[in-house]
Length: 510
Ligand code: GLU
Image (cartoon, rainbow, N blue to C red):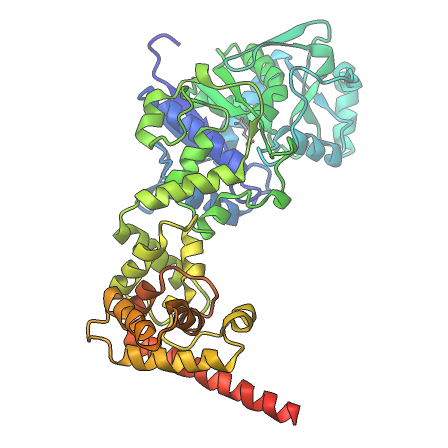
């Protein structure tokens, strides 16, 4: 590479939301670019209109922005940096294809049906979410040679006259081998006979992935192609194209496949697999970036919590491993918890509010000061922002909460429980005006002392009343944060429910 400035690209196909595997590829490219003070380019590979959707292009941007993986170049789209779009580069693809045709490196092929060509496109341009293509040169079958390479000009003219449009097929000498010297996988040899003559432009003129990627990578002066291992089997085709065009190929680094804990392909059943799902679950982008960074790369020394700055400082391709990376959900949850704990409370409160505001019915108690208090109570135990929102649901509304049936059965099934609750109500009504946690505690402990009962006899039904649950964080803090008015209202609501239940019970037993 010498002193050539590093230029890398992330080239997603917008055929779905951004998969965590794709995000890991983007991250490794970004880290490599930043570490080497190079350029990170985003190129959306949207030539396959049958499978591509605008909504997914948007989803990819959104996911990259959320992960804060900023790219450096692209057209200006309403004041923001857009990505390069492959479909806008058709003129260049056509020009290069003609050059290859003129040199004899490719020939017109009249035998392929549209269906075959599309199938070729799909299997070539698989993204990280799809099945792994054969790797290590393990393409077993020898590919048949297309007979169109021997068509005479007269035969071609007559086929054209019948309205048959040719695809363009690359001529591959079956006797040779193609060597990929991969920065991660090392020396990998592909016998060309197993590659076969391959289509580069479909009969409708649409360029296929291997061809378009080579033309664009060359035009964008990409120095390193860092991508998922499933593309290793595409690399010999791409190298043959570079060779035929007399272009210097970039260096290749195929990063390891990501598997689930059973060492199988990650699937929906393993939990969230798309970046937007992690956003919706309230994961922090920094935690996800940290986790993805360690899928196939390690800074050494068993270090797990690394800031972005540390990662980009230490990231090298030499320390990317060959063996599959295991997506360990428990580790990601742990990491997110660590990041949550370290987040300033104000920022965490903002995230909680944003999540609450995104709900179909926005709760009525989400003013920042209140949410900050809630967050300070819950953030040490939660694994995600969504957990804070769910575990703390009773804080974000003023109204009564429906008690969970198990909590009712466990702590409120006897007439004594209702009696204790009435006594707690009276004690809390008289607690000092600030109603802070020690005030609540003194009120309840004082009551226990006066009546000679255990504090727990009061605390359990009180907890069911104010949280609706059998377990919660410290009840004195909970009551204080809810405030006296809400706490008393909820106690009244539970007392009313208990007396109603009792009345129904008496009625039945008559
Ligand atoms: N569009 C391809 C994908 O999404 C890009 C592969 C490459 O980086 O060359 O997998």
